[in-house]
Amino acid sequence: MRRNYRIEADGWARGVQLCRSPNCDERPVGTPIDLIVIHAISLPPDRFGGRHVEALFQNRLDPAGHPYFASIWELRVSAHFLIRRDGEVVQFVPSTLRAWHAGLSSWRGRERCNDFSVGIELEGCDTMPFESAQYAGLGALVEALCIRHPTIDAIAGHSDIAPGRKTDPGPCFDWTRLLAQFCAPLKRA
Image 1 (spheres, rainbow, N blue to C red):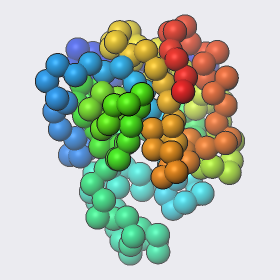
Image 2: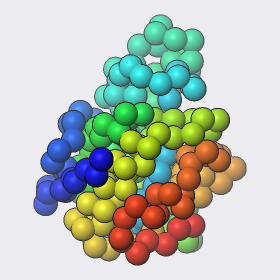
Image 3: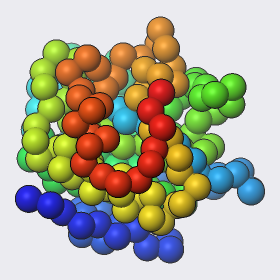
Image 4: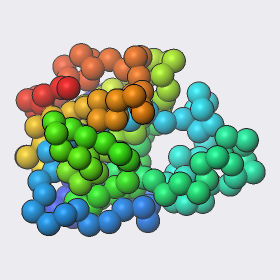
């Protein structure tokens, strides 16, 4: 099923679930948004479902909820969007603001990718394929972002901007499938 999203002037998408994160701030003045970064996340690792990602991005993750959570609950991170296994899109930060998703990163010789990128998390991991509904939602979302931010001209994985430190979206992510689903002429890493 083809979804249609629209990113408003304020950076909030229509047709998605909103779940605001405090882990964001203003982008540097005059910095164009020209990169989309694809991530993968599962909490606990390799398990899907639940609201643990939302809790992490809202600084509400219970460190006693799982042994892994004790090592990450104090992180102050976010992404602009999350796409669940069923294709549901959740937005945490407006695309006009800087979400804290990339960490130490570099793209085409430019440091601090959070300054000029939009981060999209897919509920997933390195060892399992992503769902068709996720590709459909991601394709529609990327298209909407390119319409709202016409300076976007590239798409990369977290592993491309933080090589050696990050592996996501991982070897199971099908870049060809994604790029075939929308019309925007984006360059892939």
